[in-house]
Length: 159
Image 1 (cartoon, helix red, strand yellow):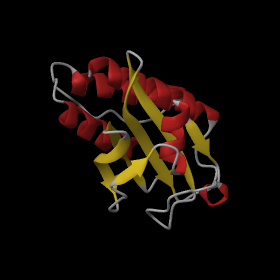
Image 2: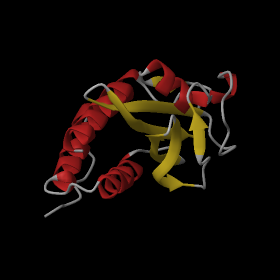
Image 3: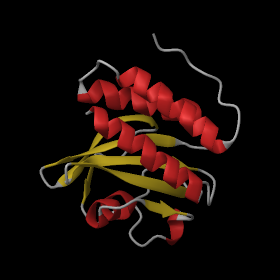
Image 4: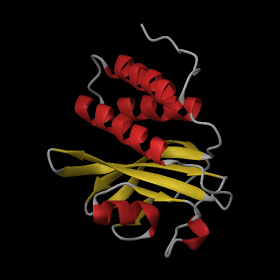
């Protein structure tokens, strides 16, 4: 049974709790979309000062919108375009302090000021990306990056 825990303690302790909750949600469930949907909901509940969180899935050489929480979003993003496409092209996490200074930023929500995008890789294959936007500049820290990478790794291990 899944129980929502309180998110008290250090940032690392909070991320540990949310990752344990993710594992509880994923245990015994093999539906890709259901698992991404619950992961999105969990992050939306957990993270403060965000205005969009969701997944783009890699299909036919482009990112296609997947489960998300927030305002309607861009449906398709090619490799190399915007923050998400740059993360795909580099196959690494991209953390942007001010999206308005990022060359080629795609503004799906004008309120977004910072962003972090984490590629989902399994056995060397790109599955998609986790994309999180914030209305606050410099919202995402190095610790957020490290812990969100761990969150995505946990998710991918269950997929």
